Length: 123
Image (cartoon, rainbow, N blue to C red; front, side, top):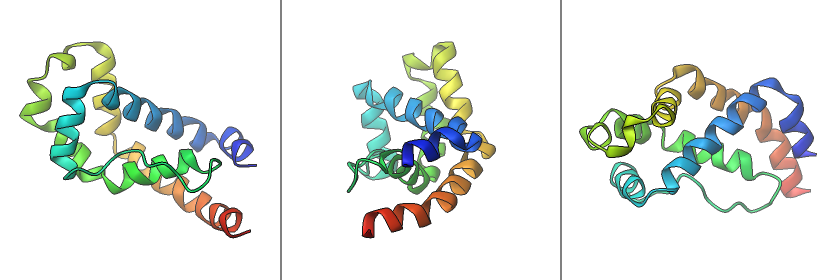
């Protein structure tokens, strides 16, 4: 049911893959995990969920919780002086993090999905 929800709503079709790319990118490099932990005070971007169906939304929630830390990370000297920042893909990730529309879409996605997730978890 949640998969259908994710696949049929355009804002989710756009937002969830971007969120996934951010987490995958950061967690694929030890130095970036270290920088992330510095800015988030050790909090993670992805938590294992209570249920399998809500994993995408749990990831969105974790990004939302860490929004300010992520923005600070991607405008920091630690990020700018990192050797990974030189490629087109890294600049794309940075653009997503600094995109106000992306963060707005996360909030909209979470607001839309929250009632359904609550019902499915309690049902």
